[in-house]
Image (cartoon, rainbow, N blue to C red; front, side, top):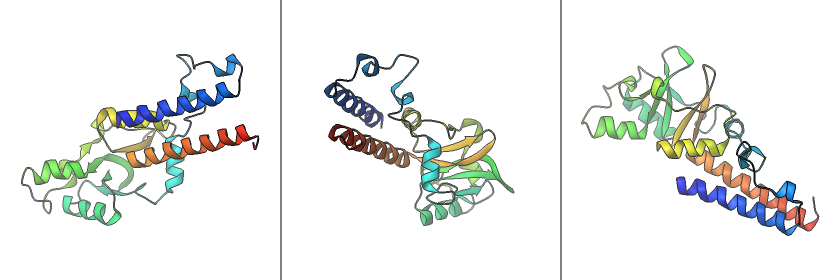
Length: 198
């Protein structure tokens, strides 16, 4: 995933630099971003996690799928399977906005299957990644920052938290899709600009 993130960033820079050079843009607007002003902060990779959540919708595509700590692992895996997702947010019983952790397919494989435990008697709270160990993002996090965070920590799902409130969850697939869409839109804008159709 790190190589994918680097390739996407590099491709975006190459396309942008090439088009700007071709159009003979002044040196001031063509200069590389300074250390305090990264490329993703100047507009090319400006999509945020909030944009992804908005695109997914409040209740669709795993944005708000959750179970609670007292559910059995069997029930959680059944829900993941029926919703075609790889992870569920875990909340404390009776507190739908209070995140307790996350349970993933990887947790199931490593902590149930490999250890020979029963998924019908083990509680989600016994195998989940707990809140204090969670890696989270905020709605304002840029998608490339989230991609880098997920790649470095080898995770495929990341909860979105604002203050103490849970806002949803995004997967690496959601982020890659958003990056590809953003690059496609940028290419269209640059092509329109070159053709004078802006």
